Length: 141
Image (cartoon, rainbow, N blue to C red):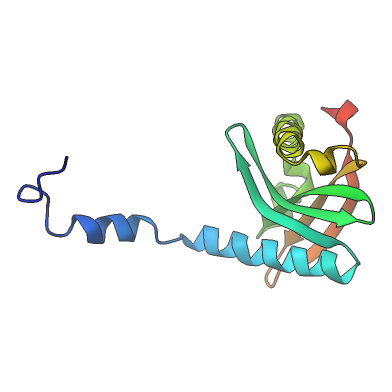
């Protein structure tokens, strides 16, 4: 039990401040929203966003017909160090696959459907989107 007499008066304020999103988080959320809109305009239907698991996170989960599409969104303000897709290395791909497996375990009605992994890379200011369908396969992990 917390002794309110000893609890700092501004502790609640400090907790609220620590939850304020950073500029990077705000930018990431905006790019993910733009990516989702881009995919919706291409005919995909959203299932959920930011599916977080202990071993990884999936930015967007969409449906393309019967196919369950796991989408990683990557933003690079400057492409000199490689585009967003280049940053989805073997380690990141493994984390995405594990998160996808956990998602499918908790959504068994989708587990029987075919799946694919896409990447939407965004670069520049304002960000330009590039959608890479079927960016990698399980064998690549």
